[in-house]
Image (cartoon, rainbow, N blue to C red):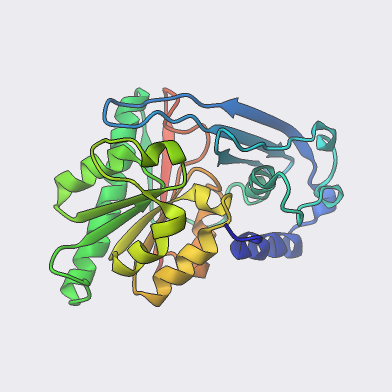
Length: 280
């Protein structure tokens, strides 16, 4: 994990330039403990979610169950210029605050889909959207003879079991998975899961496409993943619940496709919105 996350720093600087932080105050902070298993093929998600509302909008960020958000409730009511957004302490909270500043992006998505029903159904629907985007990238690379081997290689950084199930039904890639959650690394399931700290770089060199969870900005690994992917002609799809408002801007840093899912996520019954932003 890096001491700094360069894309966060860049987007923070952009926000300060384009918005008046003296006019944006923090209205509310919610911390949600998540214990959720969307389907029998999916793992048990035991993360925390932080949601922040400011006068500009709403943002959110995931964190590992052992990670403290470090919520200081005294900042509620303060303007963003009164909050130390440059300090890496309580970083998930800072990511959620920055995400709220970018709320209601002024960028039109290439595709917007509303999914509804229970959480299990929505888990499948969103996986199908991801699979469609990955298939589109793979087909394009295949047409240009840019695949690295005869069998397409897909890497999932931040394991989502439903992505694996749907993607391997769509076509038959070599499927690699990494995660930072230690408990997952020793769990025997439908696919082997490797330690992201050790294997991300190696697998990024081999993969044709990497599906990357938006949580990588809060773990301060997003910039490094994108840089390694760019050096090795690996396409990157970021699936952003964490930093869902930041998603369209990731294309400016080398991401090929950003898929944004605003809070409340698919884990809640009812309607959810999926927005797809493709690099032109």
